[in-house]
Image (tube, rainbow, N blue to C red; front, side):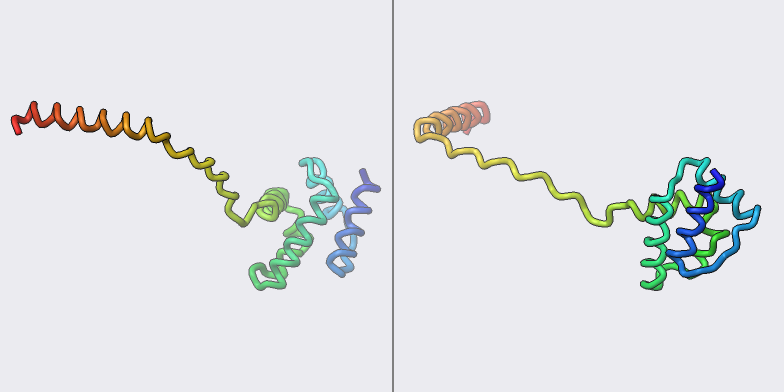
Length: 126
């Protein structure tokens, strides 16, 4: 685990351009992050997301502070946010048009409508 922590810390320093010492308290934060089920690919994804957000002035540079980044709850939230789809799902394909009724079907429907209309007139006394 210590080797994994050292590699992740080196990855963090490389991606952010920072030189941050790896003291015991920081090792503990890395341990808790990995123990929560996150991995190096998640770390890289969140850092790149935060860098993009900072460049676009939507996040503060403090989001990349190691003490902020390694808080498990915040890390999880940032990881989930960077996975969110920011576009609407494609609408379902329209149903194929139904073929027009055949002339004899149209005539049968017309006759049925005339019968119903005549029945209604009879019932209404018109």
